[in-house]
Length: 249
Image 1 (tube, rainbow, N blue to C red):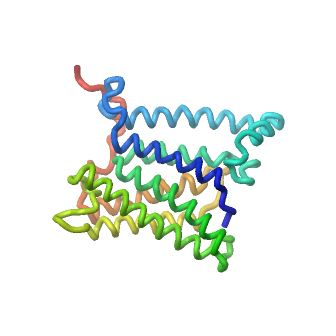
Image 2: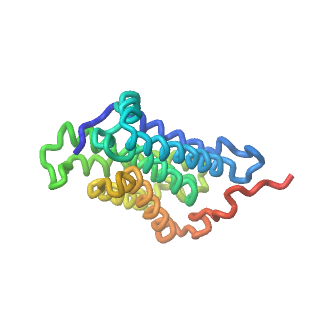
Image 3: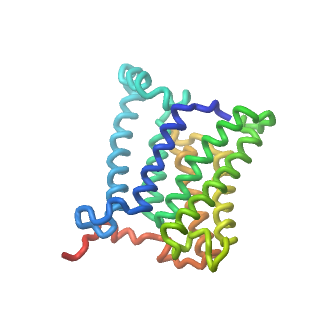
């Protein structure tokens, strides 16, 4: 289990800005787009990804630029990222994936699994993780990842209920807590926790848990939504052809 990095985790928590904008549709109506928040977020992420690819390529190939980059941003990066791609790149890829394909609730949950689970596992694992597995990760870290994200999911689905009681992801249905919602959250948490446990940094850092956790959990939650929450595929998968559709004047 890696050492808890306060700078890195604090920076990652800023990632909640994306799902907040997406869920509350804060960019609604911008540029006359029907799906303005989704389209603008995705386009912004895509542009940022291009910048990251260019700067990371320069950082890894040019020693002088690499030293300057590490001096400025090193506190927010893992030591191993000095020789491989910045973990922000797979993180932004995962954000682009969930925002492009899924409803805001699933995107919010998928990003939450990473932003809450990863720092919880790192913090509690580094402080209390005496029993460790073959890969250096601790049992305490794995358990704290799963429990913290289940709690985070319950809080989020309560927010969904308060802001949109008719949402299929609302915590309460028919006057009581929806057990199927809790099960759906838990399935996503366990999936994300297992993916984090087995995660590596293949493809020069692209196949990082910053990518695999949100992507895998979003897919599992989407499937659970169809089979457990009786959601239709049209409610779960966004039609890509409508991303930049413009509203009629």
